Length: 199
Image (cartoon, rainbow, N blue to C red; front, side, top):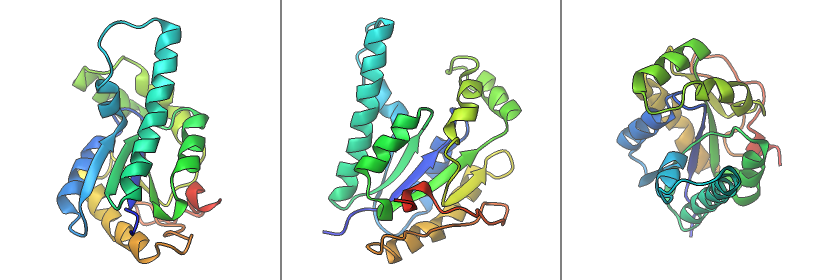
């Protein structure tokens, strides 16, 4: 059985990951893609109030289960668009442990801090300052296959930009190389290949 492809979108809260993921499901015609979002997993948790220590444990288990759900979906041939916030180093390390590097197209979703703050205020369903807290953490590893800036490109444009590389990753499946270093949406080259390729 051929494993599914994983388009892994990483960015802060309010950066536009979910909007890009929805557009990808509309424009990707090669295969059947599923949108797996970490927020969706969080929303399934019990609604009773948890103490700080209990919440920390629950959140870590949630993230670990989320990563393994991605792996399980892809392992049996499902194509997946992942919407995640890698704001703690262990989350990325865990993904590197459970996901096959050759199946992952790693996409950095960027947005300037002032625009993130504006979106956060506008949507009203996020704690104030959440994106600012995540801003320096989420992209700390530095390496992507592709990068886009949602302050200068629409979700549809970001999705359309991603599609050829998602298809290329299928052509190179099984080589251990994936698509390697790729351009950003402004046409410049990302000089480093994705951290998923460095294993």
